[in-house]
Length: 321
Image (tube, rainbow, N blue to C red; front, side, top):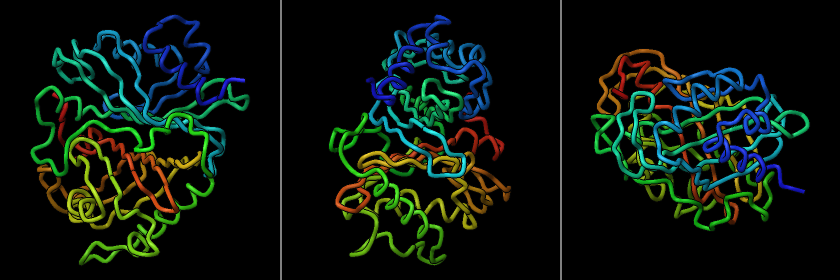
């Protein structure tokens, strides 16, 4: 019997190269809804997904291919319930035509993606999805800067250090998600002077001493808790000091991995400049996806997708053109 995670990932790969109605019908419910990053936003129906998402990707890249780094699946612990498949990776191809406002480089590009897919009760087809493609990073790869300021190291998302993120076979998914939920619960509260939260590091902390945190374009990636605070947590809390997170529609665990997402996850007030974009004082929201690898009772790696095109749009900036 084919693993449902493998089947869904294979079906998504086929959609990039096969525009036939049969390929779409095999994977997508006729009334499937994909909530995408800005500027695509919500796309309804199998035909709409083909027209507004898949056809533009095929036109923008020569022979695009999915290169997954994590594919996990399981029962959603949140009230929405259902069986979900989630993961991240890159769409790989030569970028030769504009994509939703991003001018082409004419060169090889790795378009970072994060995705959460809810399956029908039979586990056969996708009925609802949340998908973020890191368009600002596509701009960066073309040699342009989407934001006036960048924080951490800009790089492609590496796969898990253990090389077992695609349909993992070992580990306790419930325990992995328990660990992530404990971290998230402690992270809600922090010292406004230092930005510190209890339970994150130290002997009883949820993060590994050698944690790696991989963020979207603008934030970039960093190493150990000190790097995370310097390159992401500190600047983010200064810009959005009243931020409230959570509001997750999906939380799943699978093996040594877990994934959570909110749409939007955060509500906050823009109280200081951020990534070089001037303060607006506006109330903002943020769409978030997090993917985790756990090891020895700690979080070892965290890959994060954020819809920063939508965030900049709320601030009054179109960073794609």
